[in-house]
Length: 446
Ligand code: S3P
Image (tube, rainbow, N blue to C red; front, side, top):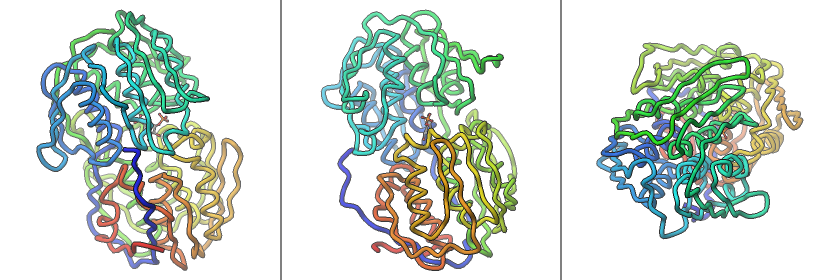
């Protein structure tokens, strides 16, 4: 929903040890895909553990607008009655994807090879983000996009009446672009091929296979080659959504910030295309143990046990960026208390997220008394014994910026206020009760 209500500030105060069990919500990426693939299938898809964040609720609403029936049965328990590949109906109204880049980009892909038109919009953050990265490859299938300057939303996409399959080499590491191309390839005859130089999250590939598509993945000298055979009949499935590693990163890093903390975080996805943050924390010296590794719903998961640790700054290599792209804001907050400097390389994609995350973290950390350096593609945070805090920072309609500074405030000398905490509801609607239940001191207002 782009109807963003009034800004609500939230303040984080120095906290005693965080202890207990942190049951974080379902994975956002998998939740979007479960709804979209359910809508593109024949029969019923049953989903448990769905993230009921605003981003995913907006995708659920969009799937209804394209003709699927989406029903909530209980907390996290949803079903989708699909219309099948090529069965999307033309929506009667504008599709509002709110804050969600994943929602809009995947849905554009899913409709681009049907003979229908749809107009997409979002909130002030989403309407600034680049869409050409998706509409360019969708044009190769025969779809036409009419957006604002720079291909920005609001944008009308006219699906290809007679789509052709596509071979596409990703110009940037982006699972959203990869997924848009694969979802478009579903309704094109023949084989659609996507080549990615660096592996990005592979939930679309795993789930397409689970829903019955013919899809192969090969590793070659030019990267990963993904080949999808178009026009399969996808069949409704049961999807159990694992807990989101990107959300788990917040309580895990908060425990590493606040002396004396010890947390147990059960059932967190350990998909190798998503677990870069946990490797990084271990390299920094975190007492973070992965227990009971297992497979659930086609994804590797584990329980995490984390204890407060004195950390040292490290150099995070560029080849790890895609596997922890959403975790750099909270890592930057944590790095502010590590010994020495933490250098994050190959991170320019952060500049086109819900906000320019390098700029948002840099300005907020400086306001809190932390020294940082940035280039277009690199972010460096100089650690200190204790962060002074005592500042109000801007969240820029970005949930991860808001949560990162609230976690930092749990360990800073003076409180940290974020000017607007409402974006947190997009991905982690229970952040405040969950963190206060563990011992954090979060108050409404500044
Ligand atoms: C996502 C992919 C990533 C990530 C986003 C979710 C997805 O974006 O930042 O939060 O579900 O495919 P990019 O693929 O654009 O890097």
